[in-house]
Image (tube, rainbow, N blue to C red; front, side, top):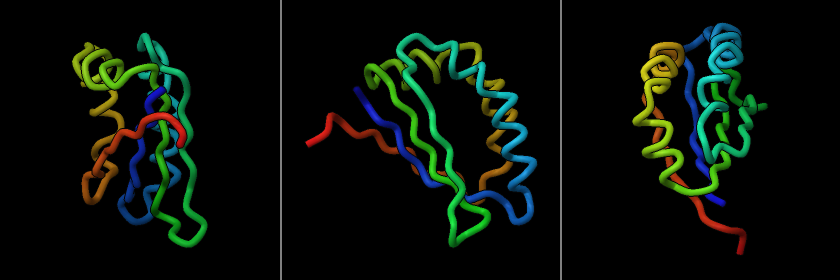
Length: 96
């Protein structure tokens, strides 16, 4: 399993709108073969920051299966305008 992780910094005051847009966009990512689950958690100390964790069967399920799909432009249009700055996305392997 691969764990995708990112810190999402959301434009000030846009947290609730981001959460609504995320809920509406979830079917886009959930439809991807190899998608195992997603967690998005608000930061306790920083109200405009979220932790994104997505579980994938393989790295390619994310980088090719989702990002090169016809669903990804819709995901991008729904969510990317909330980020400031654009997040760094990293992938992690199996538990040690």
